[in-house]
Each structure stands twice: as C-alpha cells, then as structure tokens.
Length: 426
Image (cartoon, rainbow, N blue to C red; front, side):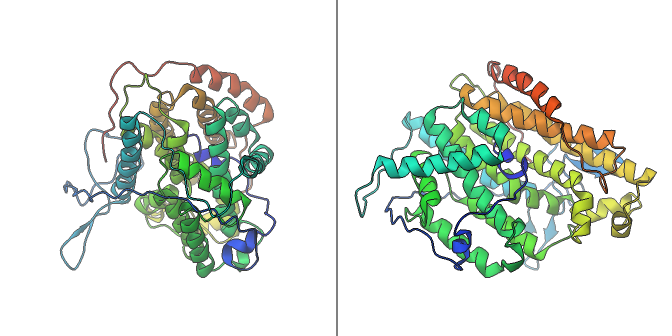
C-alpha cells in the first residue's frame, strides 16, 4: 500500500530511451517472452440505495467536514433513462477492491505463492531477468530515494517486484506529465494499454516490461488497476475541472489509489493479522487517495498556471470562491476556510490508511509508514505557509524527513492488531 508513493512522492522528470515506443512512435527491444496470464472474473454486486442527496463519509456539508463511517450513504446517485441507479465513485472503486482482495485470498487458501511458469519461445536466462530488475532498481533508487531504502528491507522477490511496478507507473505518468506530453494523444494511450495487455500475456516489449511480466507470474496481480491508471491519464488529456468530490475521488483512485492495489499482493499481509484482506486493500486505497489529494492541494498554483483546477467546483461555490479567485492567487479568509476543510478531508484518508499499514508483512511496512508520515507533513507545511499554495510550494525539509524515518521504522515493528478488523463498506 505504500506504493501510492510510487505515483506522487517524487516529481516525474525523466525519460526512458525509446520511451515513445509505448505510443508506436519509436522501436524498442522485443523480449518475446511467452507467459500464462490469469484474470479472475466475478459477478457485480448490487448495491442498496440509501440516499440520493447525502454525500460520502468524506463530505463537506457547508463549512463542516462530516465523517460517519457507520452509515452507508452514497453520493451523487443519478437515475438513468432506463430507471437504473448509477452508483457512486466510491462504490465503483470498492468493486475493484473486492476483486483484488479475492485474488489474494485465493492465494492464501493455496498456502503458497502462485508459480505460473510459461512456455518460452527461447531459453529464459536468469541473467536476462536479473538485468531487467536491476535496471528497475536503479530507476527507483534515482527518483524515489526514501522509498527505495524502504524496499531494501523486503525480501529480494518482493523488492524486485515493487521496483517493476514502480517503473511501469512512472512510465505511464510520463506519458501525460513528461517532456513528450504535448505530443501524446488518446490513441497513444490506447497503444500503451494494448502493450499492457501484452505484458500480462507474457509478451513484454522491452527489458523493463520483462520485469513486470515476471512479477505478474509470481504474484496474484490483476490487470484492472493498471488499466484504471491509464484511464486516469486519459482524463488528464480531456478534463481540467471536477464538478464535485465524487468525480475527484474517482480521478484520485485512477492516478494514485490504483498503485496501492497493485502493490498489496507483493507486499503481503502478516500471518498474525486478524484484519480482513478487504480491510488491508481499502487502507492501501486510502493512502493513495490521501497522497493524491495532498498532491493536488500542494500544486494548486502550479496547476492553475496550466489552466487546471483539481478542486471540487461545487465546494468552491459553497465557500464563495470561483476559478477566477484561484487564477488571481490571492489568499483570503474564504480561501483559508476552504483549504482547512480540504486538508481535514485528506487527513481522514491518512487515518484510514493507518488502519492497514501494520497489518502488512513486517518486512514491507517501513516504506508504507515512511510514505504516510512524510507525505502527510506536506499538509502541515501548507498550513505553515498560511494556506498560500498559489506562489509557495509546500515541501518537507531534509531534516524533517530524516527525523521521520526512525518513527516510521518504529511503527513498522509494531505487531498487527489482536482484534478482528473489518472494513465498513461505503
């Protein structure tokens, strides 16, 4: 779950050799590995209807933030012409959480890690895969130093797998945020998704893809979160405003919450944990949402200069604000009050994330806690800047980062809860 960090902790500022091969603009090295890929399907749940007018447990009602995790009330439900009720973003994402949890539970029932070995079109050498994973590790070490240090505490198999996931997420993000972003089109993302299908089918295009293909063979990783992240990139190409938090929540899931779902199967759950698998996955999702909301609040000014406003439009209106106020970049009492509520919401997601952090395999916990503690401090820095996220970029100093690492390590040593933990579904 710490892997929400994969998407947001460090700036996305590097490019790969032959990177545009993802879009069909350049060529790469075809590894031509043939593997088996398994993807489970499950029936879609039917959700009961509680309220058409209430928001989620992370709602802002007027100027007060409400959290009621005991009452499942669903936001922004809309009746279709066929008189069907469209479920909220939180429920849609919860369906994905259930599927990912089911995959891991199936693995636990078998009491061993899946070891699906492919029929190869040419002899597979350990040197080839070692080279692939080593390159992924080098990239992780260069662009996510703190996270990389945390991965060194994991078992070698888990460490390499997390590196492979990190690299794929970073390459995906580079498509819309990197130096070639102005040239990226929806069809380019379609080609990247086709390439993802090939990776899951054991046909990696280059050496970095090969590491992910091998990771997929050894852990119960589903393709859906990867596809959802690509969907988030599509949103960035066509959408620069979000009507309400329901829409923003889905975007945050796409671009950051997905990484937590990708990573839990690799990080593992402690055998001592009494938490449900669903709870651990939901906490991983919450960390991704929290990190991305923090990212959005930190980058308000930067996004505004690009003509983007990643803030719920309805909540801006309730606060007496508009896009024009954001473009003007003036800190007012109205802005301060608005930001206070946005920060409260982000902190609630961090609190949800804490519930599952200690339930992970002990060797995987430190990078999770490091992500949570370090990134949450950005919210403190926004407050310290008097909520001026227009012209001041909130950042955590190296001293504060170093001071947080021992605390993260101490929390990683805590024993899982002795009480049964169950997630209250949305």
